[in-house]
Every structure is written in C-alpha cells, then in structure tokens.
Amino acid sequence: MEAISLKFGLVALLASVTGCQFYARSPEDYRDATQKVLDTKAGDIKACYDAQLKGKQDLQGKVTVHFTVEAETGLIKQVQVDPAGTTAPAELSNCVSTAINGLKLDPPDKREGVATWMYDFTAMQPAAPKS
Image 1 (cartoon, rainbow, N blue to C red):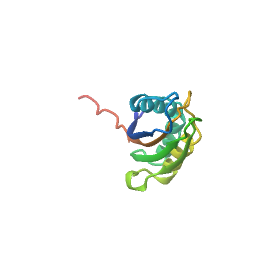
Image 2: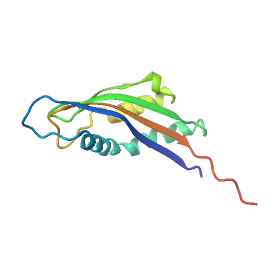
Image 3: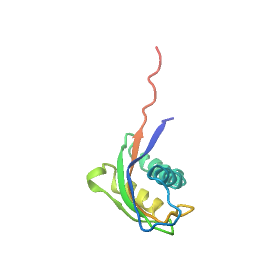
Image 4: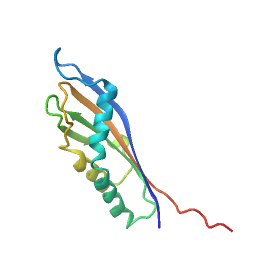
C-alpha cells in the first residue's frame, strides 16, 4: 500500500484595513483561521489526488492558488490557480480550486484578506524491503 503525503502551505496572506472599530485578526490569526477553514476540505482534495494516482502512481506536483477573503462575510472567492506556481495536472488544480471556492471564515473579519496558498502533492514510495 502506498503512503501519500499532502502538504498545505501558506505562501502569503495580507489584510488591508477598511475601518477603525471592528473585529480584526492579526495577520498571524488571519493566516491560522484561513488554514483552519481550508483544512475542512483536505479530505476532498486528497480524494481528488487519490483518483489521479490511479492512473499514475508516481504523480506529484504543486498547486498554487490565489484568492480573496471577503471583508465582513469571510467568503473565500476569486480563487485562481497560478500557472507559474503549479506543476500538478489541470484536473487536480481544478479540484483544489473548486474545493476551496465559497468556504467562509467564521467569524468573518472586517478586513479583506488576500492570500496565496500552495498545496504540495507527493506520492510516497514504499520503503525498500529489509534484507
């Protein structure tokens, strides 16, 4: 049985100020909250990868996405795959984009967030048998 490694990483998350009196996360809290909501789709994304592995057992690559976290609603929108930072097949890239589009931070923030997230898909080879 082949082990699969799926890594998620935050490349950048920036928040722009839109007012003075409101609930606002620090950049670190914003990053952590975004990671938490993206993690809710990890199973769906892994299922897409597993389906792709059926055709190519050595499939690996990265999917880099840019998106906005809408102020006041927390809605993740405008998810776009970055072709320059993506080496995985289009089907996998589309799966990632579809999976995270429309998620929401709860509670929302009064500031808009702009993020770049990278998903790293690596097929782990089984350990060599001991002699």
